[in-house]
Image 1: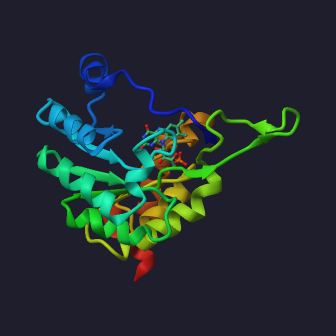
Image 2: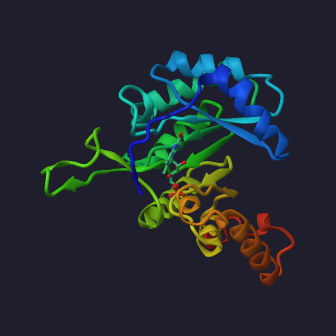
Length: 237
Ligand SMILES: Cc1cc2nc3c(=O)[nH]c(=O)nc-3n(C[C@H](O)[C@H](O)[C@H](O)COP(=O)(O)O)c2cc1C
């Protein structure tokens, strides 16, 4: 998938008033993904969400390619990634996961920088920059020229980056990027992710997540493990 959807949302007050009640009913932990145009906007969101009932964790998105300022720029260098993490950390007692951009040369160093500033967890990867051209109009298909590439095409890159980050940090990792089957999810776990996230696959198969959960449970049993935790990072031994 090549998307340029931006970060469509009702704003933090709209989220708390209108969307959180629905999520609360589901009885699962709610992780709120936040993004801003400036480091101060990130910290303001963190402060506002701190202590809101049933928000379990903040995911600091320093990797969105579809916003004009901020977004991916914060995830592009160790200094800016560390700076946003430090400021957000000061404004919330909630657990923090920082979501990294794959559009960098050394993702392990960026992961280490945010870990040093108090990230409790690292999420990766966000989308890769991509583009398409309409050969009839001879113009880029997306208004923004570039968009975010996700889905099965990015899986080997995401897996490689999870592997690299797992070798560099000691905090847990939420791995994602192209996972569409339980086998894909198992690869991320074996590479060192403690948890996985599924995005694009949901557009193709609304049952992707329950199918992946069932497949993983059966895999854990076949492996003779008592918990999936025993398999985290097993491919690295
Ligand atoms: C339509 C769409 C919207 C997305 N919106 C967000 C977002 O708001 N915040 C974020 O951190 N990542 C966002 N992402 C990135 C995904 O969460 C995920 O990191 C990426 O797509 C790779 O995983 P996947 O291949 O399973 O989709 C979005 C991806 C897609 C396709």
